[in-house]
Image 1 (spheres, rainbow, N blue to C red):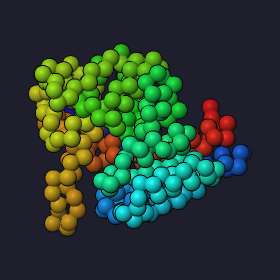
Image 2 (tube, protein in one colour):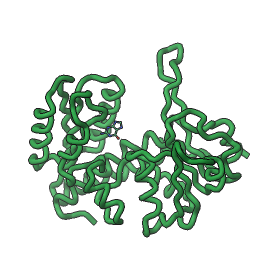
Image 3 (cartoon, rainbow, N blue to C red):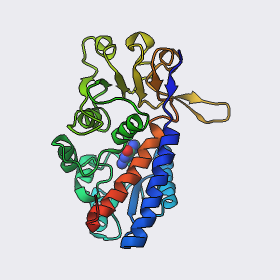
Image 4 (cartoon, protein in one colour):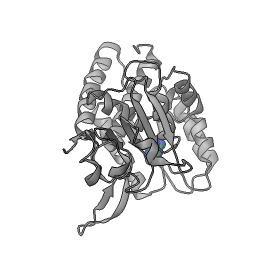
Length: 296
Ligand code: GUN
């Protein structure tokens, strides 16, 4: 039987509608206007398109938003000074520096310079640590998007066997930390597989929920999936272009095969992807509320 599709495009839209209402209320009741700055260094086409989408969404939701474009040869010192300026700007609640940065800039140094209270990517070690001890202010956007997809699709998470393929700082490690939290809609038993895992299929076949962020097309085939599993595909692989010049995207899961075995699956595109930007907006609203002391 073919799996139910978990449509990120629709869930993301639902969350954005909730956020839009919340922003209107924050403005009316508290005079708070969430502020987001997106800093882009250089003109990498993929980065330009991500940042453009982030700006467009923030404006749709009624944020105060700034797009700060810097030349590719900006010095590390000048970029750090720019971050310091936004750290001190009371109209700005969220600072996003689009990655990757040019080679001459130390990415870690830049991410560490962002005030953790304005770190809407949740990449700063303070926010990583807070998640790990179960006291997060912000959750990183892609893992938070995955969690919301599972919750809002009615997937049973508590007590389930979750297997994560991939151990990146951006997806694998934080989604494991989120789903093992002692909070409602988490409390899962989590296994993390990676490139040195001895028998990957042994683990993936045990998964009630299989989350794949391996960075490789067809890393997961049908024989690696349990009947009725929920499969979340985080992969974005560009495998060519259409005759019209549009990128052809596939995930890390062999979708055609696995959809016949899973009970639910995310498509690529239209699955996890649309959730990431939406959760960035969620974090910016949260940052604004925390700054004003009105967060629930
Ligand atoms: N580049 C690709 N994805 C991301 C992201 O989630 N945040 C930032 N800052 N840069 C990125």
